[in-house]
Image (cartoon, rainbow, N blue to C red; front, side):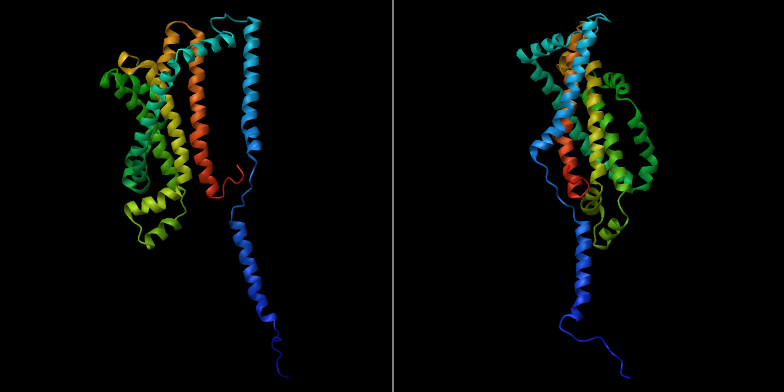
Amino acid sequence: MPEQGPVATGSRPEAPDQDVASTLAGLDALDTPTERRVPWWRRAIAVGVPPLVALILFVALWQLVWASAITDEFKVPAPVTVWDAFGAVVVDGSVFSILWTSISRAFLGFLVALLIATPLGLLVAKVPVVRAAIGPLLSGMQSLPSVAWVPAAILWFGLTDATIYFVVLLGSVPSIANGLVAGIDQIPPILPRVGQVLGARGLTNARYILLPAALPGYIAGCKQGWAFSWRSLMAAEIIAAGPLLGIGLGAYLKQGSDLNDMPTVIAAIFLILFVGIAIELLVFRPVERRVLRARGLAIGK
């Protein structure tokens, strides 16, 4: 009997191709991030209401502790007294000078730290001898409190801006470099190999392969580096106070402490905290969210 082959009809031969195309389309759909837009007012409520409620509860608890008189008022002043101390520096305009002195130092020190830590992190990540030589030192410096550098910096540079920036750099460079090293270590090996096949070597490989692939870890390191930079700046401004350094937030806090003025001390602490939260919300969180969403890792956030 003759073999019966597939029946030649008008539609049957195209069926396998359609199945393959449908399967590939489904796989592409799985790999494509789905955008889920959330109305701005819902995002505002989700972001703004919880911290506002927490702040109200904190102030209510603070007022309750003050009203109960379980401790002396010079130790725990009333919230309205602290608000008056804050209002005084706002009314006379000195708060803007205080904020500018500290924030400008922090940003300049952080930018210089980026310029130092980025190539340093690349070297540590890709050159085994450099990693063996200074990798443990970077990790050790990251755990060293920045305030420990302040006395030495004062002896080396005196009460000048060089002391402040020296402490800020030593606080932030190790964190940024270690974040970049961790990000590069997590790159799938196939990506550098593809880059080498395409001729990307040296700086080209770092610019087009390593840094983009390690961007999430690099940004995490930058966030941590900024936090260390801000803490180091405050420690330096509190200890290294002098006429050549002006009055930043740390010096403002120290003035309150020297005068036993607890409302000023608490107002300075809140200002330091406010700046740290504002930089996180306005600078680092949008950048981090943009990077993660571009990689399909933070859809809808």
